[in-house]
Length: 256
Image (tube, rainbow, N blue to C red):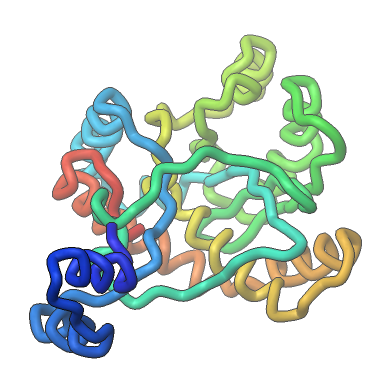
């Protein structure tokens, strides 16, 4: 976690100044290259243990199990986002990442769901999200999405452990609808394949260079609906590899 300029200054401080190009060339020969640290949620030991437990428990599940899951999440998309690309197979390693927490800006928040059969409904969240608003979103969109995507009459619903999602009234609503909820570990975005769709979606949307939030919402929904069924199916088909990666990382961050 040091820059080329800092390396050059450190050589000068010991009385032997080395040119930046020389430093860079030597580092490259050793297999070291400059990278922008990938931002990953901060994981405590308890989070890693829970992720590892989830991955271990579900590693042997059949492909049909994951086809029955309706994955959901909320995401924030900034009007002027940063979509810098990286090339590194080790970008997800802890020493190459910067722990972050979510923060705001000129943006919109949306909720959406998908399954191996494609994308479900997407809803813009107006104002601050609370338990009542979340239940309304589920009431108006979850069952309709399940009907369109047909993951099976007894589909499994995935949501994270946000307090609004786990509110007693929300869980009672899901129970009354006979909807099975997938037990989910906290702080585990690497386990949710919808995160991959969010990343691809945001990159696609910002290519349009939206100038206001209305355009941002329009482009976001259009790109969501254009997301191919094959892409969604591939994410679910390779889900066991995701679990294997989490196990290999002992519950820590992975390339996913």
